[in-house]
Length: 483
Image 1 (tube, rainbow, N blue to C red):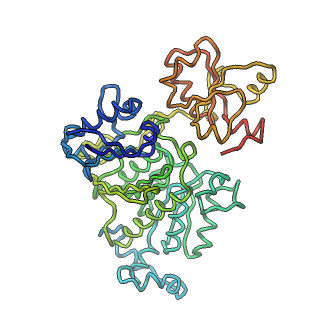
Image 2: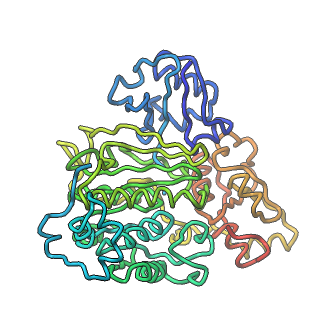
């Protein structure tokens, strides 16, 4: 028997089981046995041509099957196979002359004294930290702990890219912000916190969305870029910009109880595209807002990213170049997988085809959010006020909530029916083609994706509730919880 380790995003297709044993002599046989037992999982792992999707990797022990014999790779009895989908040492990055120009005051020497007595850091290492310039993309769950620890460690210049404002739902994990910061720009809140931790740190804020138009200019003057993003377009944008600029990308991602961590540096090892050549289809991997995350998890992964950045600055230890760490908070274990450069990588391979930044929203198959879209056909939308008026007139239209059951338990609006988004394709017979169907989710994004899918299946009488449950809570019934 072979044991398959199922990651959190796919466990909803395996009856919430994280380990499944199947009889098999090859990787292909193991995957076939797995999908035979759990048919709904097949379309998540394989495309219409029956090939394993590019955003899904399978490891035999620590080795990527792509570097072995693919699906024909033999497996032994008792061997472990890890399914790893994408989830929103000794190498320095500073020229010696940079740190030679830096001095430390007596107050700084006292502040960093516990570093200075470590032989691997010492006075020279602390000067390297002060000379370093590190850019963090995002001041959220990952960005909060990693920038706080970088500031405490004495990294001289910390850049932060974030255009969002602090929300109550951030406070469970984004520890750089406090209750009094709700409604304030994250950039301002983060800067104040970092300066209070260490007034010697220079914080440079970029209160803007990172785009293909500004990424190279923003990143150019930094030594290290740390990926604290929560969406695939920005993740691929950060990777490609780092490759084009020759900068290391300290990668971290989180989902529910699991995290991933690596250092992508194309000049010395693989990049993010070597691991995940293409993103998953929109909606397959929920964001933290949709799927949730244990509040402690970004602290563990974020601080680990800070540790990798410090190692790169000091030029000590073994950075995670060519290695991917997987963390499971429930089992409290780390697993290490080997990564290799993909010779066919379109951005860092010898025959690279990507020479400049592209449209990453289009690359990831993402359409603008409903609130950002001007539809030529307004009949696709219905506001919460319009829906409430129809209820008040005694109408009972078909309203399908496409959120997950645990979201339904948190908050719901009356006269709606639950059919989770991932179950829609298998439950089309429950959705009338003769009646108008109104679709609802938390914010309107997932329900719009379902609307577009139903259109492709021939449904014509469809509407999407603009703003979803959040808008209903804000504009109609404040007793409905916001989450």
